[in-house]
Structures are given as C-alpha cells and as structure tokens.
Image (cartoon, rainbow over all chains, first blue to last red; front, top):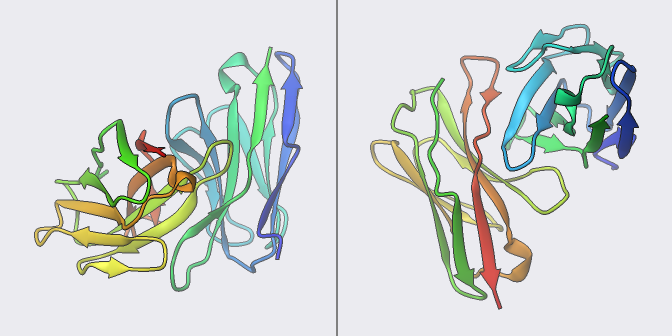
Length: 113
Length: 111
C-alpha cells in the first residue's frame, strides 16, 4: 500500500497562473480532504469530500476548486494563483473504521511569486 | 467550534517520559479527542484518540480528565525520533467529523 500520494512535491507559479494538485489513495476510503499549512501554523481545511460524487467547503475555500474524480482521486485546482496561496498543501483520506483517523500525504510545497 | 489550547513548546530528555497537556474546556458530548504529530517536512500522522476513558497503544497513552475538559498525551520514553509538533484536536462527529488543527506543541528531545 502506498497510502496517500500527492503530486507534484514542489511547484513554483507566477501570479495568475493556474495548476492542479493531484491526490490519490489506495486504502478504499470514502472521505478525502485538502488542507493548507502556512509557516508556523496548524492545518486549515480547504475542501473535503465525504464520498465519491460529493464535495463541501471547509474553513478556507476561496480561490480553490476541487474534483472528486473517483473513489481514489481528489484534485485541488487553483484557477488564478495569488501570493497568499503560497503554502504547503496536504491531502488526507479518512478510514471511517477503527481507528477512525485521517491518513495524510507527504504534501506539496507551492510558492506563488 | 470547540477549540483546544496547548503550550507552544516543550522540552524533554531522551528516554524520559513526556506529558503533553491539552485544554478543551468547551468540548461537547460528541467530540472525540485526537492526537496527531507532524515530523519535520512530513504530513501529520495519527497517534491516539479517545472519548471518555484512558487509552493506550504502541505509540503513547492518552489520559482524559473525568470532566473531559482536558487531556494529556503521554510518551513513556521519549526518543530523538519523537521530536515533532503534536496536535490535540477535537473531532466533531455531529459535523461531518470536522477536525480543526491549532498550532500544536513543538516537542524538542535532548540527547
């Protein structure tokens, strides 16, 4: 099991450019999440998907869109990147079983110039 | 949303026990107490969780106060690999299992 994988690991964008962050999990989990982590801070929830075909806004959704492509994959899109979106982005999936926990990917470090 | 309060940082000596405190005075009856840790340059990883009773697993122990307004994560023998940021989080099962991460406690382990 690879667990939760994210691509790319690093990305530099110019203001106004767009990009999609990819996330996949091989644990057959229903729920998936996207978080951002700014320096010295905890994680903040951007969007989540409780099951295939559904998505909901989290704490900081502005400037982002998501797609739950299938049960395995959950992508995050920045349509017009801004310097305020410079952050580390983590994807997670939730087991829903015992223990009911979230499993996190290694993160994507994004810099917007 | 129920919130948690943790010290910004703590230090420990290697092979000594570590007690990481967390206050959650506004916890509701449907909130589970979760602990995650984040090693440098990695995503968070699950440590332990509980509802009312104390819990033990291979990584740590969780002691929950009788009124559930505070909890303590116990690492029985700290190693250098335990140096990380530890997050105490309330998982709200009545709100789509929402979890809100605070800034956590940065644990430094000295050899």
